[in-house]
Image 1 (cartoon, rainbow, N blue to C red):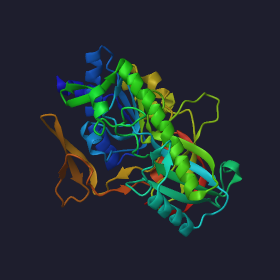
Image 2: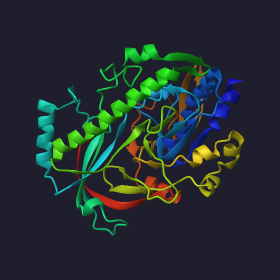
Image 3: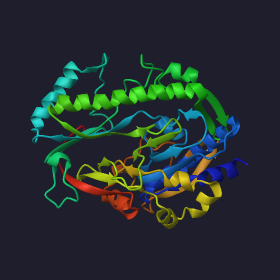
Length: 402
C-alpha cells in the first residue's frame, strides 16, 4: 500500500528544470516528502493534494535535515489545509539588488567588511550575525554590460550589487516569537505535532498555532529584509534598492513555500516583477522580468496534462508564477539515480557514475558530494519555457564571500 501512495505522491511532482543529475537526485527524493504531507492531510481530514513544481534551477538541498525529511530545493510546495509543515525549513533567505552611484573599489568594500566583523551591527537591538562569507552566500559587484540591453537598467544606473543573505538571528527561540527552525528552537518543537508516516515523521503546526507561527514568520522576514538593506548600506553607503526578495520562504501563506526560487502573483496584462538571476561565479548576472507563466501549452509540452487532470491540479499549477534564483548544484560525476534503497524509513540513493569504469556510489545525503554550479542552461531553460525574460545583463567585477 505504501508503494502505491508513494507513486501517487510522485505524480504530484512536476519538474520544469534542467534535466541533469542534480535535478534527478532532487526528483528521486521529493516523493517521500510529498507522500508525508499527503499522509498528514488525510489524517487531518483534508484532500491529499500536496504538490511540488520544480523551477529551472531545481536541485538538491544541502541542508541534511531537510533532505532526510524528503524535500528538495528550487521550486514551490503547495498544499490544502490549515497546517504548516516545519520540515521544509523556510528561513526568509533571499537576495537584494541595488544601484550604486559609482564603482566601489574592492579594498574599500573589504575594509568595511572587516569593520563589520570587528565591530558588528545591530538591528532592533539584535546583534547581526554576519553571513556574507558563509556557505553559498555572497556579494557581487557588477557593471552594466556593454551588450545591448532589453530594458534600460533601473534608474539608468551603470553599477549594481547583488547580495545573497538570510541570517540566523530568528531561527532559534527569539523575543519575536518561537523561531523558524524546529531543530534549533525548543519553543517551536513544543508547539509542533509530530505525525508518524510510513516514510518517517513530519512535524506540523495546526490551526491557530500555524497562524501564530506564520505571523511570527512575517515579522522575521521583515527583519531579514531590513537586515539586508542595513548590510548593503554599511558596505556601500549610498544605494538605490531595485529589489529585495525572498527565495526561501512563505510569501503567499503558511501552506505555500517557495524554496530556492521566486514566487509571485501577477495579473494577465501587468508588467511582471524584476528579480536577480545569478549563475556560476564566472558568468554574468541578469535582472529578469517575470511573466505570467506555466501556460497551458507549456504544461502540455512538459507532458503534465494527464496528471494535472487526474489530480485536479491544473489551476493551482497554472497560477504558480515562478522564476529561478540561481544556477543550482550539479554533479558532473553522476548521470542519474540508479536506484533508491529503502529500509525502516531511511533511504540510500545509488548514483550511477559518469565513468563506466567507476562503481556506483551510495549516499544517504548529498551534503558531502563535490558539486559545481550550473550556468547558462538555467537561463536558456527559463526562456524556453517562457517563464521570464532576462532584460538587463550585468558583468561581474568582483565577489565578496565566494
